[in-house]
Length: 538
Image (cartoon, rainbow, N blue to C red):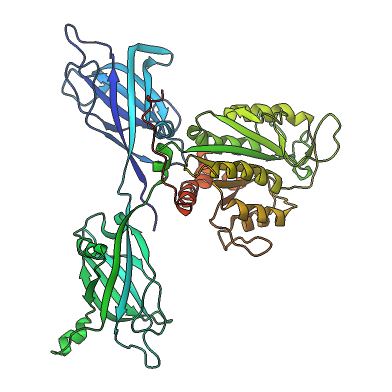
């Protein structure tokens, strides 16, 4: 089932607004716009606050709602207007200033104060705006443990193979399936495994919404036979929370009609019911978890001589190539979640000056091994352009050194036993990997660390090996057969996005990161850090 999109509510307050009204203070209102692309007129209004009278330092009570997507840069504009008439068109109202920022910047800071500007570079007096973000959601899940006794025997040979299906009643009165248990083979008194379902999914967060439970006998040909059903609601299930089981008669409607003395087709018992908190990606980010972004770039010989226009490292006259376009697309989104904007960047597979001896499989892109950090995505691009002419492309193509390098940093961070840091490694490669087995082992080890790996395949190669590392079609295992603890690799070939809008590559590779981050901290049992009540970051 697709996760609900996260919804974020923004609370707005301002100080020192310009006074446009003669003899009284302004009557402000704040409007929220989102950019739908490029061009001057690409702003769409999403919401606006109420209109307050005579107030130059307003706190608006009407919150502004916006859908949040980690994998996109969501450009927002907040504009404050002085309203002096009844029309909803803001074109005839005085503009008191505005601010442009991304939703990523707001959620990464949780609270953000910015000076208001009348236009770029022109401040609106001393006016400032403060934006606070809060995720709207029900972060509870219900955990249930069921067993049954004396179920009807449905199979001619052997006993029944029972499983349970849970349905909630939709607003249209129809039953919607929300969960199905595993099948317990050949057993009329089965115990099913404990399971948990988000409350939003299970009962639309409504404790009194009608629920129906079907107990059926599994048949491999898909013609499952109903053993019996019962209806209930979460408020009734919760009675099992105090350790006293709740029991339901499993009723088969046909049998009930036919036989006066019919009591039930077995009894289903809820042994235990708990409400748990399930944290979301935004709980971690807004709680202060930093996402550390590292880049590894493939400088092996298979890329072709950078001076030749056929090379993947060849700079076109506009100073770009596929490596830089991919880096820009992904980095542009991730950089909002890293406060210091200092990104370690490495190259691999090249021989370095001055002696060009052996190929180096993990060198600082800025040639400064003690301080491999580049300032912002622009800093990485600058370092790349500077060192490119000095490198000799070589080989083999080894991924494991850079994965192990970032893993060792992530491993140190993991020892702090709190959810304060997560790492994303972006590897840009032409895909001709040499150390496949060592890389597999490195990924299996890394799957126990706070790390996600994104591989973007540049150029026309057949990326079979990369697809194996992604593990979407099956579980990736190490050379000794150990499976990954969680799925941490996302691979995409750049060519699928070559002619698409720049944002679509980032959407594709970053969409899985929020769940990977949550799955790691959940596996470790770590709650989001509590944000310090420090002064708001500006």
